[in-house]
Length: 270
Picture 1 (cartoon, one colour):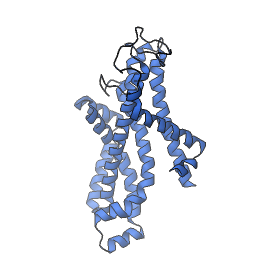
Picture 2 (cartoon, helix red, strand yellow):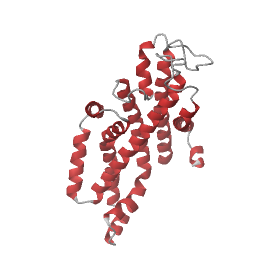
Picture 3 (cartoon, helix red, strand yellow):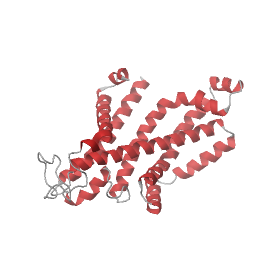
Picture 4 (tube, helix red, strand yellow):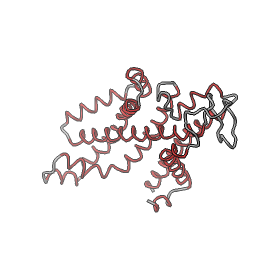
């Protein structure tokens, strides 16, 4: 892994460093927060940066840094979980379609075509408005939104592999469909799927942040990075740090993942 990291171009190394930073923040952020995230610790709302409050205070006098460290855990954690669920489900259905009977492939493909024809953000908004936005429901809704996109990519890979000689040989010697899918085909799909899961992660971060900004994401007292932007947007003129810091956090997270994916895929292409 270290050898692969050294081979990355400068943009990839920068992306990797920022991604690792946010992963570390998500893991240990709540434990190193200087204040309790919900505590009113400043007598002045939208206070500027100071030695006591590095990023100032928010609209209720809470420490922005502490809330950022906790909010990053929700944004990164939920996005990783939702992206993993989406890609695992999409890839599993794609392998089923590739090794199963033709009618299974047709049924799954038409179902996914139907789902993908619905704009993802509209689907998520309707589902969240209908069923609520608890942590589990929000994760499932966002994951379902991105299953069809992953299915199409994974199916194209699986169908191509299913025609190769080594898979035909395994089929001829009597290997079952589960063996063909998990042993013969899936290992050769891992690298492209890792790139796809990175892209899904970026899309999900932006979708979750957008839902939170509209008030349909995490509900108080929980808050992710999108919620931090929404709740402080009224103080943009007097307490810009409370808005800009979480917004820049979202931007740095998504851009760094894109830089890392681009660098990794270019390296494999060479």
